[in-house]
Structure formats: C-alpha cells, structure tokens
Image (cartoon, rainbow, N blue to C red; front, side):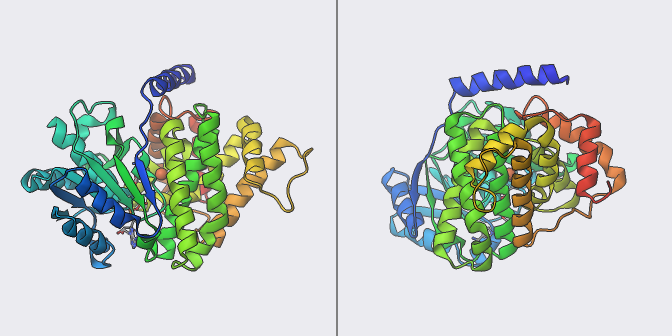
Length: 404
Ligand SMILES: NC(=O)c1ccc[n+]([C@@H]2O[C@H](COP(=O)([O-])OP(=O)(O)OC[C@H]3O[C@@H](n4cnc5c(N)ncnc54)[C@H](O)[C@@H]3O)[C@@H](O)[C@H]2O)c1
Ligand SMILES: [Fe+2]
C-alpha cells in the first residue's frame, strides 16, 4: 500500500469515526464500585448473567465478591473462566457455546483485556451467528448484542471503553481485531480493590500498555483537542503513579489513579487509534508468547526515536503537557530536545518498573516477516504521525533486539 493511499484510507476512517462516534459506557468508579455494578445489572432487568473471567481471578477470589453480589441481587449466574491471556478463536468458540447453553440475558466480563475481549467477541458472534474470524475488521456486527458490562482487573488495555476485541489466531500466527461500536459495554466499574493483587510485573506491563495507548493516540493524525486532553491526563497519571503501584500493590490511591488513567487512554485511542508500537508488538506476541504490554513497553522508545525526525513538534508539545524535565522546561528549549526528554522519561519509567531494554527472543531470521506484517497492519489502519519504510522498521526491530 503506498503512503498516499494509506493517508487517504486514514482520512476515510476519520470521517467514519466522526459520523459513527464511539459510545461511552456509564462509569462507576472507586472501591466497591464493582458491587454497585452487580446491582445495576439486576436493576436493568437481566434475569441471568454469564460472567466471563479467567482461572487466576477465580483462584485468587477476585471475582467472588462480584458473583456474590450478582446472586444476592437475584440473578442466576453462570461462570465461564476458560479465558487465557491473548484469547484465541478456539476459546471464544467455547465461550459462545457456554453463552448459548446458559441462556444468559446479560454478559459481565471481569478481568484484564483478555476476558473483556473474549466476552466482546462472544457477544458479537452469538448475535450474528458468525465465527470471530468472519467479523475481523470494521463494523461487521450487524445484529443486536446482549446487554454487556465490564469490570477491568488490570489498568492497561482500556478495553472496557473501546470499540475493539483483539482475538488471536495461532494457526496464522496473528492477532486480528473485531471493531464495532456495539462492543462498547453499557456500564463499567473501575474498582481498585480488584487490582491490589496484580503482581508487580503485570502491573508494570499493563501500565505501560496504557501509556502506549495515551502517547500513540496523542501523536495520531486523527487526534482532536478532546482526545489529546484525555491522553495527556492519562500519561501524566501513569508517569506519576505507576512506580508506586509496582512498589506497593496495596496502595488503593495509586491503583485508582491507574484504573482511571488506563480508561482515559482507552477513550482517547478508541477515537484516535494507536501506531507502530502496537503494529510491531502484535506480530511479536503470537510469535514469542510474550505479554502485549511488556512488548509495547520495550518497543516504545525505539519507535519514538524514529518519530523524532518527522514529529518532533508534536512530541515536544506532549512532553510540555506532561510537565517532563527537571524543574520545568525552558520555553525556548528546541522541540527536538523536548522530544528526546519524552523518550528519556519513558526509558526511565521502564527501568524503574523493571522492564528490560531489549527483547532478546527476536530471531534474526524472523525480522523480515515481522516487518512486512507490521507495516501491512499499520499502513492504512493506524494514523501514524510519520511513515516508516521497510528499512526504517527493520532498524527499529533490530535495535529493540539489540542487533543494530
Ligand atoms: N480491546 C482493546 O481495545 C485492547 C486494547 C489493548 C490490549 N488488548 C488486548 O488485551 C489483552 C491483554 O490484556 P491485559 O494486559 O489486561 O492482561 P490479561 O487480561 O491477559 O491478564 C494478564 C494476566 O494477569 C492476570 N490478572 C488480571 N487481573 C489480575 C488481578 N487483579 N490480580 C491478579 N492477576 C490478575 C490474568 O489472570 C493474566 O494471567 C491482549 O490480548 C491484548 O491484545 C485489547
Ligand atoms: Fe495495547
């Protein structure tokens, strides 16, 4: 795809986004808000609810209080806890069968991006009678979906407010996205109490995923003043509070701040989209079985290094908005040095939360295909501030693998 055609397609996506704006769910926030959401689901008139979650959350008893609240509110509850990180087509198909047999009249996802995305794909496929891979792409969910609710237990994916469900196709070694306004939940709860047991490494990786959403959406050519305001608020909170949440997972204030930040970043990127960091990470995840946020975190500074030449002004504005730099910035500081401050702040944050500098699993022989697939995903889909050639992308991937 030529860059001219990519730009034309992005412009068309921008028009579509303006004509079909993404809905925003009703949001409950704060400790105990997941219990309030359970009551709200009953008040909405649902009789039975399918809770989509994963085994870890069941074992850690993170879901138990929500299940109790649903039962106490008079709902019949069925639990589907087979979801694994990076949910596959096969898992979604099992979930659809469970949805059919449970005869649920509402669906509640309790979990990180994986259970929320699995639940979204399930309701989309169940309503339309199609398989997940048939819905790959934009606005293909033509039937009405069941009432859908979500309680995120990580502060990362932002999936609780986005129009997307990301599904893995291990056979093809890829991830694809079902993108439709109907996938946004009706109501959500951002309950920091459910996040206190999230291990530091997962807190770090998911928090860096959220920061990637904030910064990639801020640099997007589809960003608006409104999405930029949300993404700046998200980025500032993550720079400030992620180290503390990794240090002391029981710090409710830090957890609450990150839950809100990840949700704000989700609101920004579901409107302004992401960029090359995600395009490259999506190729590496299925290949090396590494977490999405972890890959984003490591790739992030290398992609931003590439942006400096073409998008320094925008990066400088973002650095200024984030208040980066010791003792505030000199107003005369040139954009390039401010852009470099932004990158340095991300490298410092990665180091402070224990994320390594390189992805040592990347094999030289895999690089050409990673590059080809990443560019095929990005071009015409992601409103990147400046375009990469195959040689540019190869350089970024090789640097992230410490081979440059
Ligand atoms: N739909 C979207 O808009 C969107 C955006 C970004 C990422 N994603 C997708 O989201 C998925 C990643 O989601 P994620 O990063 O939130 O992680 P995840 O849902 O895959 O969870 C990661 C691990 O953390 C555990 N965990 C989750 N919450 C916990 C808690 N409170 N306490 C203890 N352990 C907990 C899970 O059991 C799992 O083992 C990927 O598949 C990615 O592609 C989707
Ligand atoms: Fe992401």
